[in-house]
Length: 79
Image (tube, rainbow, N blue to C red; front, side):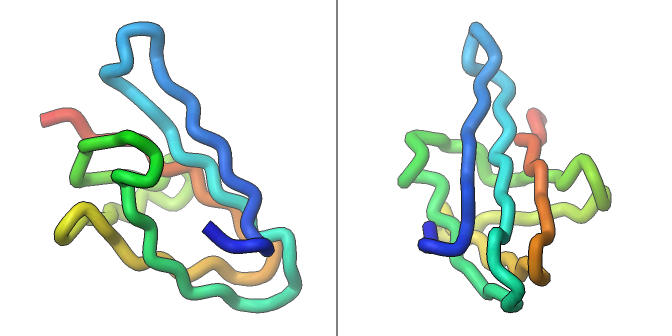
């Protein structure tokens, strides 16, 4: 994603649920475009389980801004 972002994908055993964990490891604000296909994912809505913000994909992508040292835990929303 970026040399300044540590990212981890965690999936449930049956692969129905997953979390994208993003950590900005810099003291700079970062604006990113996340392409979920880069992670072999096909979910189009995510909820940050820390802030409760919702992110919707457009063309398998969504934009996100990480403040310095900010962490997001983005869980797929199953509909």
